[in-house]
Image (cartoon, rainbow, N blue to C red; front, side):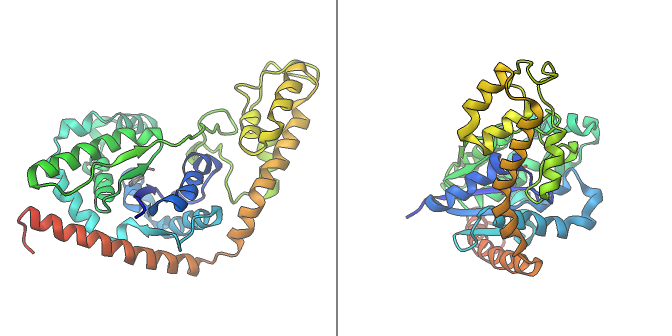
Length: 326
Ligand code: TRP
Protein backbone atom coordinates (compact mmCIF):
# COMPACT_ATOMS: atom_id res chain seq x y z
CA UNK A 1 0.00 0.00 0.00
CA UNK A 2 1.29 3.42 -0.94
CA UNK A 3 1.38 6.08 1.75
CA UNK A 4 -0.92 9.01 1.24
CA UNK A 5 -0.01 12.69 1.02
CA UNK A 6 -2.13 15.78 0.70
CA UNK A 7 -1.07 19.25 -0.25
CA UNK A 8 -2.74 22.40 -1.45
CA UNK A 9 -2.07 25.75 -3.02
CA UNK A 10 -4.19 28.83 -3.34
CA UNK A 11 -5.36 29.45 -6.90
CA UNK A 12 -3.75 32.80 -7.56
CA UNK A 13 -3.87 32.39 -11.34
CA UNK A 14 -0.61 32.22 -13.18
CA UNK A 15 2.00 30.03 -11.51
CA UNK A 16 5.53 31.48 -11.31
CA UNK A 17 8.89 29.74 -11.25
CA UNK A 18 9.12 30.33 -7.49
CA UNK A 19 5.94 28.27 -7.01
CA UNK A 20 7.33 25.66 -9.36
CA UNK A 21 10.73 25.17 -7.76
CA UNK A 22 9.31 25.68 -4.25
CA UNK A 23 6.37 23.26 -4.36
CA UNK A 24 5.11 21.94 -7.67
CA UNK A 25 8.30 20.25 -8.85
CA UNK A 26 8.17 18.19 -5.65
CA UNK A 27 4.52 17.33 -6.14
CA UNK A 28 5.39 15.95 -9.54
CA UNK A 29 7.99 13.65 -7.98
CA UNK A 30 5.71 12.53 -5.15
CA UNK A 31 3.22 11.12 -7.65
CA UNK A 32 5.48 8.10 -8.17
CA UNK A 33 5.82 7.19 -4.51
CA UNK A 34 2.60 8.24 -2.87
CA UNK A 35 -1.14 8.26 -3.28
CA UNK A 36 -1.60 12.00 -3.84
CA UNK A 37 -4.37 14.49 -3.17
CA UNK A 38 -3.69 17.98 -4.52
CA UNK A 39 -6.13 20.67 -3.51
CA UNK A 40 -7.02 23.98 -5.09
CA UNK A 41 -7.59 25.98 -1.90
CA UNK A 42 -10.11 28.52 -3.19
CA UNK A 43 -11.76 29.22 0.16
CA UNK A 44 -8.36 30.12 1.53
CA UNK A 45 -8.03 32.87 -1.08
CA UNK A 46 -11.08 34.57 0.45
CA UNK A 47 -9.23 35.13 3.72
CA UNK A 48 -7.09 37.81 2.12
CA UNK A 49 -8.86 38.61 -1.14
CA UNK A 50 -12.60 38.88 -0.60
CA UNK A 51 -12.97 41.69 -3.14
CA UNK A 52 -11.88 39.78 -6.22
CA UNK A 53 -14.23 36.84 -6.44
CA UNK A 54 -15.17 37.87 -10.00
CA UNK A 55 -11.91 36.38 -11.29
CA UNK A 56 -11.94 33.27 -9.09
CA UNK A 57 -13.20 30.81 -11.73
CA UNK A 58 -10.57 31.88 -14.23
CA UNK A 59 -7.84 31.83 -11.58
CA UNK A 60 -8.71 28.23 -10.74
CA UNK A 61 -8.55 27.20 -14.41
CA UNK A 62 -5.24 29.00 -15.05
CA UNK A 63 -3.66 27.59 -11.92
CA UNK A 64 -4.60 24.02 -12.70
CA UNK A 65 -3.51 24.40 -16.33
CA UNK A 66 -0.05 25.20 -15.04
CA UNK A 67 -0.15 22.26 -12.64
CA UNK A 68 -0.89 19.85 -15.46
CA UNK A 69 1.58 21.55 -17.79
CA UNK A 70 4.44 20.87 -15.36
CA UNK A 71 3.50 17.22 -15.01
CA UNK A 72 0.80 16.78 -12.37
CA UNK A 73 -1.00 13.77 -13.77
CA UNK A 74 -4.71 13.46 -12.99
CA UNK A 75 -4.44 9.72 -13.70
CA UNK A 76 -2.08 9.41 -10.75
CA UNK A 77 -3.18 12.17 -8.40
CA UNK A 78 -6.58 13.41 -7.26
CA UNK A 79 -6.73 17.08 -8.22
CA UNK A 80 -9.72 18.76 -6.62
CA UNK A 81 -11.33 22.02 -5.59
CA UNK A 82 -11.74 22.72 -1.88
CA UNK A 83 -15.11 24.48 -2.19
CA UNK A 84 -16.48 21.50 -4.12
CA UNK A 85 -16.20 19.34 -1.01
CA UNK A 86 -18.54 20.91 1.57
CA UNK A 87 -17.32 18.44 4.21
CA UNK A 88 -14.30 20.72 4.66
CA UNK A 89 -16.63 23.45 5.94
CA UNK A 90 -18.47 21.13 8.30
CA UNK A 91 -15.26 19.76 9.75
CA UNK A 92 -13.80 23.25 10.03
CA UNK A 93 -16.75 24.20 12.23
CA UNK A 94 -16.23 21.21 14.51
CA UNK A 95 -12.48 21.73 14.73
CA UNK A 96 -13.00 25.38 15.61
CA UNK A 97 -14.40 24.19 18.97
CA UNK A 98 -11.09 22.50 19.78
CA UNK A 99 -8.79 25.51 19.60
CA UNK A 100 -8.56 28.72 21.60
CA UNK A 101 -8.53 32.19 20.07
CA UNK A 102 -5.14 33.15 21.60
CA UNK A 103 -3.64 29.98 20.16
CA UNK A 104 -4.65 31.19 16.69
CA UNK A 105 -3.50 34.75 17.36
CA UNK A 106 -0.01 33.47 18.13
CA UNK A 107 0.43 32.11 14.59
CA UNK A 108 3.59 33.69 13.10
CA UNK A 109 2.41 33.14 9.50
CA UNK A 110 -0.73 35.13 10.27
CA UNK A 111 1.34 37.92 11.81
CA UNK A 112 3.51 38.02 8.72
CA UNK A 113 0.47 38.19 6.44
CA UNK A 114 -1.00 41.03 8.48
CA UNK A 115 2.28 42.90 8.13
CA UNK A 116 2.54 42.22 4.38
CA UNK A 117 -1.04 43.32 3.80
CA UNK A 118 -0.51 46.45 5.88
CA UNK A 119 -3.61 45.54 7.90
CA UNK A 120 -4.29 46.29 11.52
CA UNK A 121 -4.63 43.29 13.73
CA UNK A 122 -8.12 44.30 14.90
CA UNK A 123 -9.38 44.23 11.33
CA UNK A 124 -8.55 40.58 10.76
CA UNK A 125 -11.66 38.62 9.93
CA UNK A 126 -12.89 35.64 11.90
CA UNK A 127 -12.27 33.55 8.77
CA UNK A 128 -8.70 34.72 8.38
CA UNK A 129 -7.94 33.95 12.02
CA UNK A 130 -9.29 30.47 11.38
CA UNK A 131 -7.13 29.92 8.26
CA UNK A 132 -5.07 27.10 9.80
CA UNK A 133 -8.21 25.45 11.22
CA UNK A 134 -9.66 25.23 7.73
CA UNK A 135 -6.31 23.95 6.51
CA UNK A 136 -6.44 21.31 9.24
CA UNK A 137 -9.87 20.20 8.01
CA UNK A 138 -8.41 19.96 4.49
CA UNK A 139 -5.65 17.74 5.74
CA UNK A 140 -7.29 15.48 8.30
CA UNK A 141 -10.30 14.57 6.16
CA UNK A 142 -7.94 12.61 3.89
CA UNK A 143 -5.97 11.03 6.76
CA UNK A 144 -2.63 11.53 5.05
CA UNK A 145 0.59 10.31 6.64
CA UNK A 146 2.46 13.25 5.21
CA UNK A 147 1.92 16.81 4.06
CA UNK A 148 4.50 18.48 1.81
CA UNK A 149 4.67 22.18 2.59
CA UNK A 150 6.96 25.17 2.40
CA UNK A 151 8.56 26.56 5.51
CA UNK A 152 5.96 29.29 5.93
CA UNK A 153 3.31 26.60 6.38
CA UNK A 154 5.03 24.77 9.25
CA UNK A 155 3.19 26.73 11.96
CA UNK A 156 -0.10 25.71 10.33
CA UNK A 157 0.92 22.10 10.26
CA UNK A 158 1.91 22.27 13.91
CA UNK A 159 -1.65 23.28 14.69
CA UNK A 160 -2.98 20.45 12.52
CA UNK A 161 -0.91 18.01 14.52
CA UNK A 162 -2.21 19.43 17.80
CA UNK A 163 -5.80 19.26 16.59
CA UNK A 164 -5.41 15.67 15.39
CA UNK A 165 -4.11 14.65 18.81
CA UNK A 166 -6.80 16.61 20.58
CA UNK A 167 -9.53 15.01 18.52
CA UNK A 168 -8.07 11.55 19.13
CA UNK A 169 -7.89 12.17 22.88
CA UNK A 170 -11.45 13.45 23.13
CA UNK A 171 -13.21 11.10 20.74
CA UNK A 172 -10.96 8.09 20.24
CA UNK A 173 -8.15 7.26 17.86
CA UNK A 174 -9.26 8.58 14.45
CA UNK A 175 -6.57 10.59 12.71
CA UNK A 176 -2.94 9.85 12.00
CA UNK A 177 -0.88 12.83 13.20
CA UNK A 178 0.35 14.24 9.87
CA UNK A 179 4.07 14.75 9.36
CA UNK A 180 5.37 17.65 7.29
CA UNK A 181 7.67 16.92 4.39
CA UNK A 182 9.89 19.94 4.08
CA UNK A 183 11.38 19.34 0.67
CA UNK A 184 14.43 21.07 -0.61
CA UNK A 185 12.96 24.34 -1.81
CA UNK A 186 15.34 27.00 -3.00
CA UNK A 187 14.30 30.52 -2.19
CA UNK A 188 13.68 31.95 -5.65
CA UNK A 189 14.24 35.69 -5.84
CA UNK A 190 12.08 37.90 -8.03
CA UNK A 191 13.75 39.97 -10.75
CA UNK A 192 14.15 42.85 -8.27
CA UNK A 193 15.90 40.66 -5.68
CA UNK A 194 12.97 40.48 -3.24
CA UNK A 195 11.06 37.23 -2.72
CA UNK A 196 9.32 36.24 -5.96
CA UNK A 197 5.65 37.07 -5.61
CA UNK A 198 2.82 37.80 -7.97
CA UNK A 199 1.75 40.84 -5.98
CA UNK A 200 5.24 42.37 -6.01
CA UNK A 201 5.27 42.39 -9.81
CA UNK A 202 8.65 40.71 -9.93
CA UNK A 203 7.72 37.21 -11.05
CA UNK A 204 8.58 35.11 -14.07
CA UNK A 205 5.50 33.08 -14.94
CA UNK A 206 5.44 29.61 -16.47
CA UNK A 207 3.12 31.05 -19.11
CA UNK A 208 5.28 34.08 -20.02
CA UNK A 209 6.27 34.32 -23.69
CA UNK A 210 9.90 34.01 -24.74
CA UNK A 211 10.06 37.78 -25.23
CA UNK A 212 8.61 38.47 -21.79
CA UNK A 213 11.22 36.22 -20.22
CA UNK A 214 14.03 37.93 -22.15
CA UNK A 215 12.86 41.36 -21.20
CA UNK A 216 12.38 40.47 -17.51
CA UNK A 217 15.82 38.88 -17.23
CA UNK A 218 17.39 41.83 -19.04
CA UNK A 219 16.01 44.08 -16.29
CA UNK A 220 16.92 41.72 -13.44
CA UNK A 221 18.91 42.88 -10.45
CA UNK A 222 22.59 41.92 -10.56
CA UNK A 223 25.67 42.73 -8.52
CA UNK A 224 25.56 46.54 -8.15
CA UNK A 225 29.37 46.67 -7.85
CA UNK A 226 29.85 45.17 -11.30
CA UNK A 227 29.39 48.10 -13.64
CA UNK A 228 31.30 47.25 -16.77
CA UNK A 229 32.74 44.22 -18.42
CA UNK A 230 36.02 43.39 -16.71
CA UNK A 231 34.78 44.38 -13.24
CA UNK A 232 34.92 41.36 -10.92
CA UNK A 233 31.38 40.25 -10.00
CA UNK A 234 29.82 38.65 -6.91
CA UNK A 235 27.44 35.93 -8.05
CA UNK A 236 26.03 35.26 -4.57
CA UNK A 237 23.21 37.72 -4.21
CA UNK A 238 22.84 38.13 -7.98
CA UNK A 239 19.35 37.26 -9.20
CA UNK A 240 20.55 36.08 -12.59
CA UNK A 241 23.02 33.72 -10.97
CA UNK A 242 20.21 32.30 -8.83
CA UNK A 243 18.25 31.59 -12.02
CA UNK A 244 21.25 29.92 -13.64
CA UNK A 245 21.31 27.68 -10.59
CA UNK A 246 17.75 26.57 -11.30
CA UNK A 247 17.82 26.03 -15.04
CA UNK A 248 21.45 25.87 -16.11
CA UNK A 249 23.13 23.72 -13.48
CA UNK A 250 26.04 22.35 -15.54
CA UNK A 251 27.39 25.75 -16.42
CA UNK A 252 27.13 27.21 -12.93
CA UNK A 253 30.79 26.62 -11.89
CA UNK A 254 32.05 28.27 -15.11
CA UNK A 255 29.66 31.18 -14.77
CA UNK A 256 30.80 31.74 -11.21
CA UNK A 257 34.45 31.65 -12.21
CA UNK A 258 34.06 33.93 -15.21
CA UNK A 259 31.80 36.38 -13.38
CA UNK A 260 34.22 36.64 -10.46
CA UNK A 261 37.23 37.11 -12.73
CA UNK A 262 35.44 39.77 -14.75
CA UNK A 263 35.64 37.85 -18.00
CA UNK A 264 31.86 37.37 -18.23
CA UNK A 265 29.77 40.54 -18.45
CA UNK A 266 26.18 40.89 -17.26
CA UNK A 267 24.73 41.47 -20.73
CA UNK A 268 26.02 38.20 -22.09
CA UNK A 269 25.25 36.35 -18.87
CA UNK A 270 21.64 37.55 -18.95
CA UNK A 271 21.20 36.55 -22.57
CA UNK A 272 22.47 33.10 -21.79
CA UNK A 273 20.19 32.90 -18.75
CA UNK A 274 17.09 33.93 -20.73
CA UNK A 275 17.94 31.33 -23.34
CA UNK A 276 18.22 28.56 -20.75
CA UNK A 277 15.06 29.72 -18.97
CA UNK A 278 13.19 29.56 -22.26
CA UNK A 279 14.60 26.09 -22.98
CA UNK A 280 13.25 25.04 -19.61
CA UNK A 281 9.85 26.68 -20.19
CA UNK A 282 9.31 25.60 -23.79
CA UNK A 283 8.01 22.07 -23.10
CA UNK A 284 5.75 23.48 -20.37
CA UNK A 285 4.39 26.09 -22.79
CA UNK A 286 3.85 23.37 -25.36
CA UNK A 287 1.82 21.19 -22.98
CA UNK A 288 -0.11 24.19 -21.71
CA UNK A 289 -1.21 25.10 -25.24
CA UNK A 290 -2.97 21.77 -25.58
CA UNK A 291 -5.03 22.11 -22.41
CA UNK A 292 -8.45 23.63 -22.92
CA UNK A 293 -10.55 25.26 -20.20
CA UNK A 294 -13.19 22.57 -20.68
CA UNK A 295 -10.67 19.80 -20.21
CA UNK A 296 -9.49 21.37 -16.95
CA UNK A 297 -13.09 21.70 -15.75
CA UNK A 298 -13.68 18.01 -16.48
CA UNK A 299 -10.51 16.97 -14.61
CA UNK A 300 -11.55 19.05 -11.62
CA UNK A 301 -15.06 17.67 -11.69
CA UNK A 302 -13.82 14.09 -11.59
CA UNK A 303 -11.13 14.81 -8.99
CA UNK A 304 -13.57 16.66 -6.77
CA UNK A 305 -15.99 13.71 -6.87
CA UNK A 306 -13.23 11.34 -5.77
CA UNK A 307 -12.15 13.68 -2.99
CA UNK A 308 -15.74 14.05 -1.84
CA UNK A 309 -16.19 10.33 -1.55
CA UNK A 310 -13.16 10.08 0.70
CA UNK A 311 -14.05 13.13 2.78
CA UNK A 312 -17.66 12.10 3.30
CA UNK A 313 -16.57 8.74 4.69
CA UNK A 314 -14.33 10.51 7.18
CA UNK A 315 -17.11 12.90 8.14
CA UNK A 316 -19.49 10.00 8.79
CA UNK A 317 -16.93 8.57 11.17
CA UNK A 318 -16.44 11.97 12.83
CA UNK A 319 -20.19 12.46 13.40
CA UNK A 320 -20.44 8.99 14.88
CA UNK A 321 -17.53 9.48 17.24
CA UNK A 322 -18.83 12.87 18.34
CA UNK A 323 -22.40 11.57 18.72
CA UNK A 324 -23.77 14.15 16.33
CA UNK A 325 -27.00 13.88 14.39
CA UNK A 326 -26.63 11.46 11.51
N1 TRP B 1 -2.14 27.37 3.11
C1 TRP B 1 -1.56 26.80 1.94
C2 TRP B 1 -0.84 27.91 1.15
O1 TRP B 1 -0.92 29.04 1.48
C3 TRP B 1 -2.56 26.16 1.04
C4 TRP B 1 -3.26 25.01 1.67
C5 TRP B 1 -4.59 24.93 1.92
C6 TRP B 1 -2.69 23.77 2.07
N2 TRP B 1 -4.90 23.72 2.44
C7 TRP B 1 -3.76 22.99 2.56
C8 TRP B 1 -1.38 23.25 2.08
C9 TRP B 1 -3.55 21.71 3.06
C10 TRP B 1 -1.18 21.98 2.60
C11 TRP B 1 -2.26 21.22 3.08
O2 TRP B 1 -0.22 27.65 0.16
